[in-house]
Amino acid sequence: MRSKLPNIGTTIFTVMSTMAQEYGAINLSQGFPDFDCPERLRELVAHYLNDRKNQYPPMVGIPALREQIARKVQNLYGFSADMDQEVTVTSGATEALFDAIHATVSAGDEVIVFDPAYDSYDPAISLAGAEAIHIPLQLPDFSIDWDRVRACITTRTRLIVINTPHNPSGAVLNKADIETLAQITRDTDIYVLSDEVYEHMVFDDGVHESVLRHEELRQRSFAVFSFGKTYHATGWKLAYCVAPPSLTREFRKVHQFVTFTSPSFIQYAIADFMRECPQHAIELPHFYQEKRDTFCRLLANSRFVLKPSRGTYFQLADYSAVSDATDMEFVKQLTQEKGVAAIPLSPFYKKAPDSTLIRFCFCKDDATLEAAAHILCAL
Ligand code: PMP
Ligand code: GLN
Image 1 (spheres, rainbow, N blue to C red):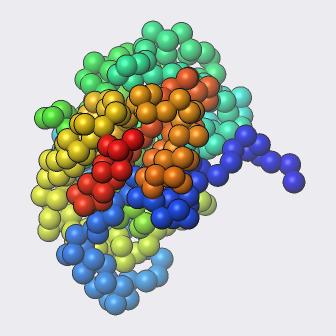
Image 2 (image 1 turned 90 degrees about the horizontal axis):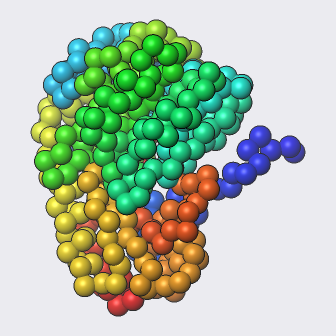
C-alpha cells in the first residue's frame, strides 16, 4: 500500500518503552509517572463508573468539567473563557493538536514548528497536506530565534506551533517571547497552536507564560492542556483546548469526527476533583522541582553533564564523556546492556545536529531515580 507517511516509523516513545520492558530496564524514557494518581481521584472515577456514567457525554465535554476548566483559566491566567464557546474536552492533547492543525491548515499551507519538536506535530501537518517548516531552537538554551521566524514567514504560513514548557529540552518561553510572537502575527491570518501540557511544571519561581495571558495573542490561538500530566494519569487520555469562538467552531468540526467525545465517568471525576482539590495543581511545580533536584543531585558525581531543566518532567544529559556512540546507539546500549532506558534527541529533529544529548524522565519514585542513578554513576 502507498504510505501517506513514508518517512514515519513507530514513535520513539513506544520503541524505547518496549525495549525497556524487553530488557527489564529502569524506564526513564517515555514520559509517565511510576507512582499512582491521587487516591481521591481514583475513588471518584470508581464512583462515577458505578453510578452509570457510561454513555456518550456531550460532544464538547460535560458542562461541569468545562465550568471547572473556565474557572481554572480565570484563576491562573486572568482570562474569563466562555465554557460553551471556547472550551472543548478532547481525548488527550494529541487529539487536540491534531484537531487544531486540521481545523486550520490545508494542502499547500505552511506551518512553522521548532526543532526539537514533539513527534506528533509533523505527521498531523503532513496528513493535512501542508508543509512543516522546521526552525531549530538555538543552543545552548533552546531559545527561539525570532529573526529567523520572521524570515521564514511567507504568504502560505498559516500556523505557528509553540510548546512551553518544552519537551524535550525543559526550556520555557518568557514574556518577551510571547510579546514578539504577538507582534509577528499582528495583522496577519496566521494562527498559533500553543502546546502547554506542562503548564504546572515550571520551576525556580518561574511563571508559565500561557498565550491565554496575552489579550491580543489569545484571539488567534488554540491553547492545549492535558489532564494526563497534571493528575498523573497519562493513560486516561483526557485533555482540553481553549480557543476563541470562531476557532473553537472549526476545531469542533474536526473533533466531532475524530473522537466525538471522551470517557464520561473520567470527565465527571476530574470535574469533582478540580473543585475539591485545587491545591493539587498549585503544589505540582514544587513536587516536580524536588524530583528534578533529587535526580540532578544523584547524578552530580556521574560523567553526564546536565543541562538546566526549567520546566516539564524531563532532564537533558550530555553523554559525550561516557561514549562516542550516536544518541540512538547509546540509548540502545544503555537499555540493553546497562538497564536504564532514555530517549535520544535525534527523532525530535527534521535534520538532527551532531548532538550527544539524551532525555531522562524524572517523574518517578525516588527509589526508581536512586536505582537508575546508581547505574548511571558507574558509567
Ligand atoms: N505535547 C507534548 C509536548 C507532550 O509531551 C505530550 C506527551 N504526552 C503530548 C502533547 C500529548 O499529551 P496527551 O498524552 O494528553 O495526548
Ligand atoms: N509525551 C510523552 C513523552 O514525551 C510520550 C507520549 C507518548 O508516548 N505518545 O515521553
